[in-house]
Structures are given as structure tokens and as C-alpha cells.
Length: 136
Image 1 (tube, rainbow, N blue to C red):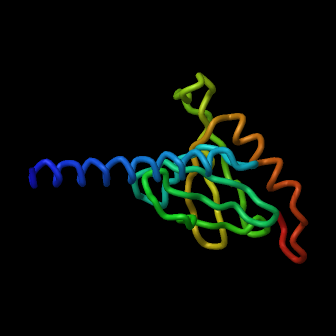
Image 2 (tube, rainbow, N blue to C red; image 1 turned 180 degrees about the horizontal axis):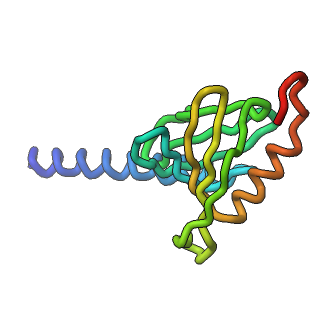
Image 3 (cartoon, helix red, strand yellow; image 1 turned 180 degrees about the vertical axis):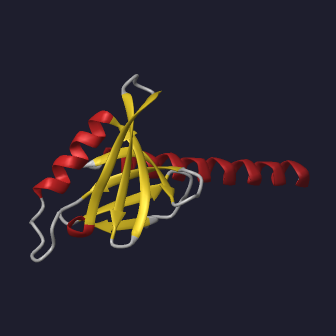
């Protein structure tokens, strides 16, 4: 009987953690301005996540995490989209994928996203106020 209760407790914990994960991913993905993308920091492996642009910043959450806080954050006025490379890959909806090389201050990183998400990101960056005293 005790072993059965232990198995039941483990199953309950697994179901609760899975429920929290699904709820978190769904909540992040349904926010306005959200899009799926992979983040790759200089020389590192890529990590799947969900990015969202807000009034002044782009934030990115790891998909495989339960943290309510974003893992990365970049200010729009200091974010430069350096290069766009169209990839042979397609996303789960069959849309072409794009690799975007970015720079935020001295940090360089890459975001891989759908072409549609890239169009939205470019519009968001361009719609921001022009920084004074800095050439774009």
C-alpha cells in the first residue's frame, strides 16, 4: 500500500509539473507580440524559446524552463539587426526560417525564427525612436 502511495505521489508531481509547463508555454505564446525563436549566443548551442517585443524591449524565455522571468532582455534602442540569412529549414507550419544576426551593445547573438516573425521584428525595431547621437 505504501509503495502504491509513493507511485501516486510521483505521478501527481509529474502531472503538476507538466501542467505548469504547458500553461507557461501557452501563456507566453499567446501574448501579443510573441513569436517562437531559437537563441544562440556566440559559439554556443541554440536554445528554443519564445520572444516578445514590448514598447521598449525584446524579451526571450527558454521553452524548457518553469521560470516566470525572461532569460534574456534587449533594449530596442540598442538592438541592431546586423544580417539576415534565409535557411533551407521550415517551421512546423511549413514557413521558411530565417537566421538573424543581432548586436546589443557589445553582445552578438543569433535568433532563428520564421520569415513572418522576422518581418514583425524588423518593423518593431524600425518603429522605435531614433537614438540621438548614434548612427544606425
